[in-house]
Each structure stands twice: as C-alpha cells, then as structure tokens.
Image (cartoon, rainbow, N blue to C red; front, side, top):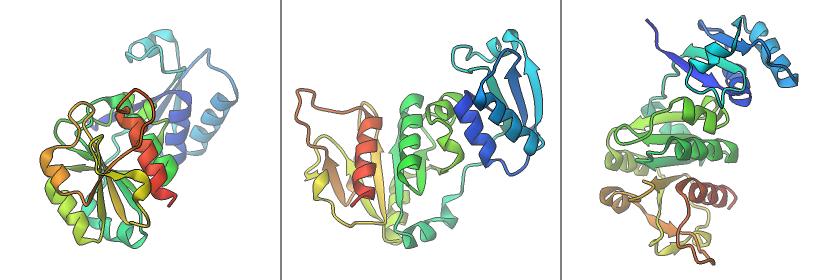
Length: 243
C-alpha cells in the first residue's frame, strides 16, 4: 500500500494543492461545517485538479489526532519524495543560491519554522540529517505553513562529506554559534553559500564546525545570551540573501 502524507490546516492544504500537478490519488477531506472564502478556494482548486472531495463529521478529524489544528481540512496525498542532492548542487552554485543545512534539529516546530523562513526568503534548498533529526511530518508541514511543498528538501547521511561536496562546487560554509568569531554583518558577497544551523541544545557538532569557512554570531544587546534556533536561522538567512 502506498504511504500517505497528511496535510492539515487551511493555508498548508491550499499551498499543497497549488503544487500538485495532478491528483496522484489524493483525497481532500472537508468538515461539513467548514465555510469561508479559503474553504471555497480549496474546494475549487481540488475540483480543478480532479481531487476527490469527501465531507466529514467531527469524529473523522478527531481520529487524526490533531483536532485542535486541522481547521476542518485534511489532504491525504502520496508521500513527497525528497530530492536527491547530487543532481542539483551544480545548478544552485551557478545561480549563487543559498542552502540551509540543519545539523540535527530535533524539534518539529523549529524545523517547520526554519523551512518556512528558508522558502519565504528565497533559499534554494534545505538539507536535514538522516539521523537524530525531526522527520518531515504533519507538525513540520503545518508549522511551515505549506512551505515544504515549495522548497527542495534533501536528507544527508554524512554531514562532513556533504559539506566537502558543497565546497567542491564553490560553496562557502557558514556555521552559526554564540561563540562565533565573525559577526554576521561582516559577511559580504559570499554566495553560493550553505548556512549551518546546529542542534537546539548542543549546537553544531565538532566535525561539522571544522568544515565551516566562517562561524558567525549574531550581536545581541539584551540580557539573554542566545536565540532560538529558528529565530537565529531567519536572521542569518535574511542577512545573507540581502547582501
């Protein structure tokens, strides 16, 4: 049986529907009491793409285990295949693009938020580690506000080798840490680039940090000495893509 991916929430479902080129056996489940313009837009788009629409009662959405966040909409679709990195690094390098590499981000909300920022700010790709990372699941998809449908996502089995491969294509590797010796505003015109965001508690692993050309920190003026991983990622991505 083909594995299904579940997308819930009105905006995430709408974004996923826009990306689907054909139905691929997808099914849209709508609460019989749901209404509003975005519901009308979702239904219209699903009909345009020949996606089966089923109207459900409350018990159906309660069975999904996400009764507080589904907003009366759920899309079941074939699991999205993660992109193979070997065929795309050269083109991203030529475009002077930016990749975000997440070195064992374990919180699905952080992962979703970073993917959302990466897509919204114009990154080319997000790379995640195969082990000790949050999977691309329903929580990640919803937190990303549907951004997982729009940005390439790859899984990495060997972080050090991946970063070496990026260097061979001309990428600068930019690590992030509160003990970084380079301030973010010192980076000028260094694209293509890979931004490395470390684990929420431990930061980047030693071997990962050793592969970095720069380890940057964000100047802070308050009494709190560090930022949440997703907030830090958003700041670094914005700064790098607007230099």
